[in-house]
Image (cartoon, rainbow, N blue to C red):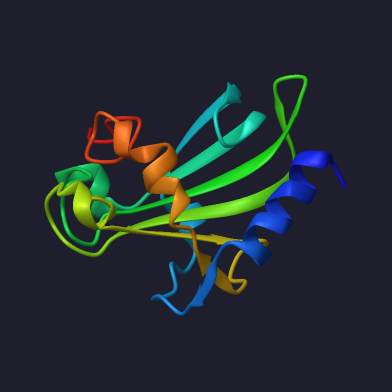
Length: 140
């Protein structure tokens, strides 16, 4: 287990509350974007970001937009072992920063696994993101 994976496990266990949001199903069939390299919160990682049709067609400020990010080890520019799955569900339209921009941020250690709410994702990172809490414009 890498030290970043260990940190992710501790973060999930220590700073989060368990939640039961709607299942995202087979998100791997959604549009996928791959990115890699060092970023705050994930270190030097390989990230597979899956975007549902709402986020892709209407944008990330729309209710029911969902982004699923598999954070993996970066193995010489290729995806390695899974560190964590982070899920952003837009539960309210708009971009008001007072309620995490309308997003529910959760994390799981495996696909379909139990999820915990991650309140620091908004306050430490996504509040600064240019696309309604997201770092990319996922629309076509």
